[in-house]
Image (cartoon, rainbow, N blue to C red; front, side, top):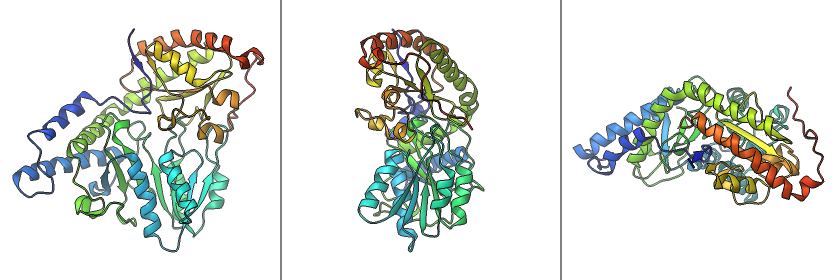
Length: 400
């Protein structure tokens, strides 16, 4: 049985070329990049090269707009807390109900502790942002708008550039959690109204433990970590040089493979999705099938538990996810499914398949072969399926 990995929104395999680029920085190139001697200076040049590689992937105007962090979560937290400190007189935050917990949990904490008023903007049945509610929440009291570029569970893409322009009209800073989008869709920050952007290395074939926060030159900013001059005084702590070099190489590779993500990977995703919808009754796609990441499909299977599906897929060597890997283990439907009003009997059976450039047609064939039989067997055991309407699903997402 060959293993099939379709959980790339949780994490990706580190590219062998990234590993090769990193290895010297564990041994012979061990100097501190802040040191002025030869050991440090050469490493400092490699850190700068990595910053330029990431600048190119993001379409940023300056390489010094990149601040290295330890994760996407740190980048998100830095953006939010920095803005509240840097924007006196404004204490409101606008975000969405479907953000990653890296944003939502902090917003909820700030709200409970009385440090901010938070507007949680809802979505429709396709996961699209309620634009009318967003416009209504904007005011001169808003310090920050923080909205994800693409949803980690459904892949639904928000119109980030346009949303940033609206935030700019009221003088608010605009941050986007682009952890799932970077490396999968083209991004051009130069000339945009986006002030800050978060990313994480392990989502684009770099190692875990390295991320970055883009901060547009001139945007108000206060550091989260103090105690050193690293990153121009914006993020204290000795740099993770192997991780930084790996992230730079991963950014270079992401540019090279961007067309592949948009064509071959997307075609594999579409073939998988079409075959499942044709062969398995009572299932449908969660999210906006028109505006979504090219690698992601989230399919709701009615009257069966997602965890049971995953268990049987695992036994056949197939790795997928019931939603956000960061919240797996919970028996509750994800907050994303609840926000989209996906029916209880379908939300519990929602499975995310997320592909990458590592996947081949044989991976899709293996899932198509295994999944229908797994669903048939599980539904025979399900008390919900016994009394269910076996006709077309009652939940019909509406496409405007």
